[in-house]
Image (tube, rainbow, N blue to C red; front, side):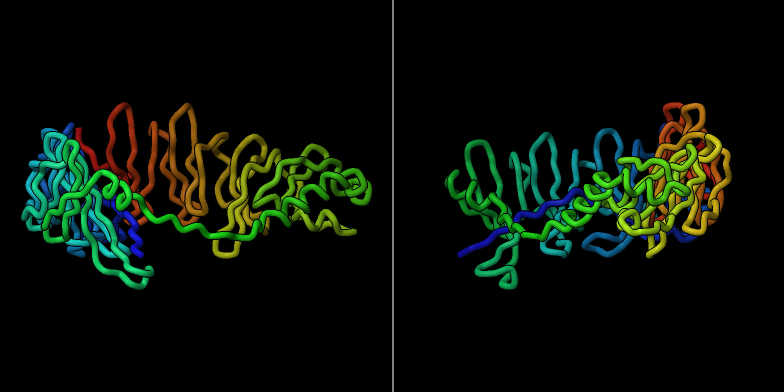
Length: 362
C-alpha cells in the first residue's frame, strides 16, 4: 500500500532575529532596497518590492525574494542575484520537514521546477505541478519525492530528477489526493463549560453569599470560560469560575475598573487589559499598571505590545521595554523575529523599528 502526502509551500517569509548587520527593507520613494538596522542603505533601492531576508531555505543562507517590472527573483545579502528576475512566481518546496533543492517557478501562467543555481529540472510548460512525499507502508518508510503535473488534458508523474511518466486522469487524481490523518481528542472544554453553567444557574445564591464583594455576575468570561467578570458598585473585577462556587471568593482582579477587556497568559503569568477612568491599561495579578492611562482605545494587544488608537491612527506601546510610538499609522504589522513593524501611513508602506526609525525616504 502506498501513502502519499502532498506538501507545497509558498516562499516562506520567516526571518532571523535582527542584529546590527541584518538588512531591513528600505523604501526610497516608490522603490525598495535594503539598509542596516541604523538606516544606512546597503543594497540600492532598485526594486518595485522586496521581502525580508531569511535563512529558512534549502541553502540555509540569508536570501530574499525581490520584484521588478512584474518579475521576481532571489538575491543574497551582498545584493548578488542568485535567481534572475525572469519569473512571474517563485515558490520554494518542502517535503516532510526538510527543504529541497527545488523551486516552483512560472512564466506566462505555465509552471516548471528549477534548482537554486537556476538549472531546469522540469521545463516551464505545465498548467500545474505539485510535489509529493512518497511512503510505502508507513510514515517511517519514506522513499523520497516526486512531482505530479498537468498539461492540457494530459497528466504526468515526474521523478525528482525530471524523468517523465504519463498517467491516466484517474491515476493522477488518486495520487494527487493527500492522505488525511484524523486525531481523536477528548473534549477538554466540557469541564469548563459545565462550571460556567453551574455559576450562571447559581448566580443569585453566589451574590447573596458575597453581597459585600459583588452585586452582579456577568455572562462575559475569558480563558475558556474559567474567568468570570463580576461587578461591585458599578466597577468590574475578575474571579476564577470555580472560586465563585466556593463558600468565599477570592478576586483575581479587584472590582476597581470600568471594564475588563481581555486576558492573556504568558510564561505562567497573567496580564489583563482593562479600562479605568475611561482609559485603557494593562495590569498584572498584583494590580500594577504596566502602561500609563493615556489612550482611550486600542486595536489589538498581546503580552508584549498594545497597539493604541487615537484619531483613527495606530501607535505602539511596549509592555516590556516601555517604549512608545505615538499613534500616527493607518496599519501596523509586527515581525516578531527581527523586531520591526510593517506600517502604512498616508498610502505609503514601509518598515519601522522600536526606536521609531522609519526605513523610508520620500
